[in-house]
Image 1 (tube, each protein chain N blue to C red):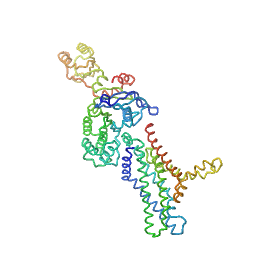
Image 2: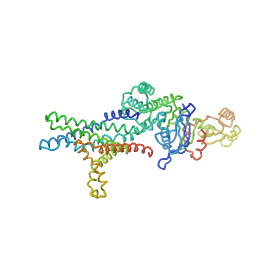
Image 3: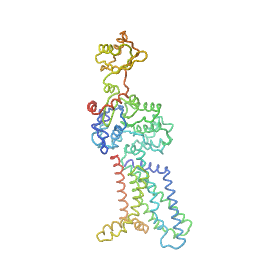
Image 4: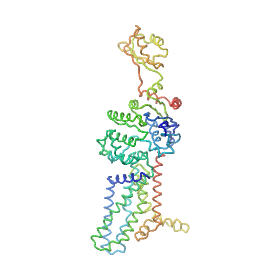
Length: 332
Length: 253
């Protein structure tokens, strides 16, 4: 278990449930201390992949290594390396918070004399000290979610896997959970899945988008934007001879610059246009003066569009997996 | 087996704080109290040949039918329904530890409830003032039988619970299994077919599993190792199937 081995290594993972393929040849690697976000529509295979990583479900084919230890043959060792919070965060209803953490700590083989100190620490970290003697079944969703997270990080495992840790939380609680996850960066490897895309974008170093059991895109959020859209987009509101004169002006500035969409002119005669280009650097500095100095046009608004992860997600999951799976899976 | 004590103490604790345990206990003690007072009434009406303890234990199956399902139906089915089985099995514990921990916790409670019926005999002893009422031999034999046969009954309950995520289904399956073992085999032994010469071996096997014969032997003070073996091997088998039941559900989930 040298520091060089990646925290998680997945190669050609396949899981078939009675004829239905849930996960189909997924491969990815997670470096130590990295926070990876799993994205995908419902039923894409996120939870299944996570369950296989924890050794809870056996895979149909493929290879999974956690910190260099193969999951299939050493599942007992794997369980000590992973802190896992399942989907919907199941908790026993009739236990107190501190009791539950104590029980889980004993199961995770934390020595008795360290355990109560560690529980205090985790309760503090997750802001649960106020409710430590409350019964879990009577806690609000936000507290329950944090109890789940506290449980996952209790034994300080090198890898933490959380299935939708922020589901059903209010914005303030999401902020707390996000800070909590960010505070683990560098110390622990974290895999989280989520539907809330800004969430993933803010916390994760790298994003993996899964659809129909296949990886459809992988990389940092900015890589993904580039890869999925392959072009930069500019929004412009302009009046004048848009249909005839403008394309010629644009090609003079940059040959790949095209008008992707043309809107109807509004009352003041301004069109809303969407320009696309394969050039990555910002063309605003050359484009904007060229258009404003040209007296055939009047420019009212101009900005470069940064596609959100949401757009990337929608575009990536809309693309058929046949076309994109092979190059992406091999690239990382 | 490092985690077995942790799980066992946790499970006993959870059983002791759950309402269904106390419902089972109240039902059990009420039914046993009625049975016991009924037995005593018979004895006061006319002299009887056997000791009250022997008659009392003759009816052991009545509480077993409702108490064992009530105690065990929750143990694995509820964990699976809530999803806490997933958190439990992703901690560094084996399925065997989980099943055994739950089994012995339920068995402990089963013994505790039966031990509380010892109070009836104490009251009888205290207020009857006649040592003849308390024949220590059948009493000890009866309790020993309860302890040994309980191993199998609770294991069957745990096995039923491992099959379903629904407590009610687990309870009914447990009841059916217990009925088949305690009463069903008795019906099988009355089959005419078994009297054929070619069926002699089968006849011997069925006779060997007759629960009521075991009870008679125990209360008469005969502890037959073959009978012990029947319960212990049945228990081991039921527990192995419970472990497999939990694991099979994971593979085919």
